[in-house]
Image (cartoon, helix red, strand yellow):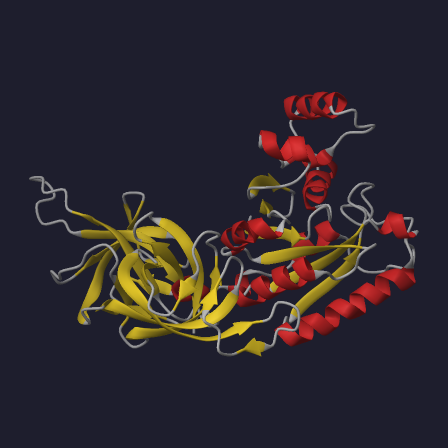
Length: 414
């Protein structure tokens, strides 16, 4: 049974937490003790019915304010598929949390309040979903019951979003009218909207094909740990543990180690202490090479005939995530790319992207919280990367403030 990671995003009070709660409730993925706790919490808040949003809003401050602050992860499954849902906050000040949650998502559900239509946060979250290369987008136009389940109202919002999606080059787009509170078109088809003939939200989640989205061509392995037991039994053992970012590795494959560019062949691949013939994307394994090569954490093992770019000069789209400091040309940070870290400096801010029009703004001197821009970086050591749009796993990086060790920017290397 395969796994789908999806994120829900949208403006504040669009009903993201309620939608996830409805999915869990209608698919019977709520334990009895959880249900009792939610019922008690709903009564204490004088809510007339069960507040399904409480299933994901777990922080005390979230429940007191009725908003989502941190990213909430929920695991559930149906007979067709396993799911990890990522509930992102809607407030603009927590947009950075949405970036963190969306970085590994296969699909994005962007909620739009039927009363308000496409708003600034809709545009911002859609831009981030597009930048992060999320291959599938579902727009759930929620609270349809509050506009009388109007088909005309739905079509107007759908058309406005399609125009937005064209600018962002979103290819796989589905738009569904829903009411998370009442369960319309979430798990079961709504009798209140007979004019809608498409699939329900759950059916879309169960049937979307995500296997074809994984990069099976570029063999990339980021070394996390070097295993050297140095026991009598394993005196000469030298294994490299890590996760396969993309592609497939097989025993006997000719490989190259980066950034040193030394060549060798794969002698063994081990998983769980057992030797296997091959391993593919997302699997965590230990690779042993035929030659003794100086390899450490942060290095990469790649296919000999299919190498990534190696450079100290990088161009990247960045989403700035620091609310106290701004990004300026000349600033110095630590760039975390996979398992490697390198000091870097910002050489230039080429342009900023306007959230509303998606147009490029030149001559920008600094970036503040939630700004999106293209920047040029110079790293202290060479970085082995693929363009993000080609290989999400090997094209993503983060900027870290060296003094506080806090992540301040999310980068998509171009």
